[in-house]
Image (tube, rainbow, N blue to C red; front, side, top):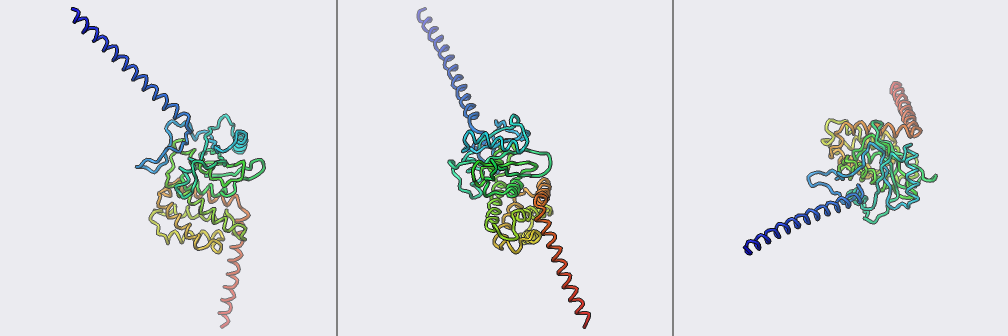
Length: 355
């Protein structure tokens, strides 16, 4: 009988011990789950640890992100001081005429620059500073519009122009958006551009990394061409960006953009440079770089989308509308040159009739 009691006691002990162990395992699992949730919520929705899926070149976006493009998204550089953050936010919100209570905010750091900009050849590090900031306001139509907003009366974006931002956004696959950019200190503006890409990714609107790479290469190329021709008579950044936007539109309008030969694209680029008065200013080497870039963009497939065609057309028209004096002058010069050619042609005809 004592033996039976002993066996019974051991059995009870094992059952109790097992129950305690199971409870401890559940408690440990809950703890790990809570830690994961806390890690996820404490990290930015635009954390650079998100990577591209091996079977897809779309930039990964956090499924737990609360960012949506149904509301304006404010991207603030991580290097801003607290007072600068407040002032930058107010500057951009006032420019966009939006209520701060309706704006979503995310922070852009060096890791974001590395993730989104370095694949195209930039050399940012995780410790790179970010000051330029942006506010993205999605629209239903109207194309891509960018405004560089003065900060306390000063334009501090030193390198990337409004039209370069717009062409880059088009190449990246962005449609119908108003984008406002500013910075409290003189800076090239890369942080704001990365912020635009990050905002779309965080909202679940994945942009192809290939398209982002092409967009960055384009921005760097157009910026370099503008810098090399700075102050040159007959050259403006608007003319160059209009030529590129026009070339994009014509390539996209073809039956199969990816099937166009290099010579086909070269002919289109040459025509657009002449149309914009740049054929004797943009060098052959620069033109060749534009041609190579447009080949890449055409091969990416982004130009096959109807939205790309629509946006390219609107971009070109908007560039011309915002620089009417420049493009009206180009049209007048063309008209004058046509009259001069006709004048000499008439003289030649008259001389032939004399003999």
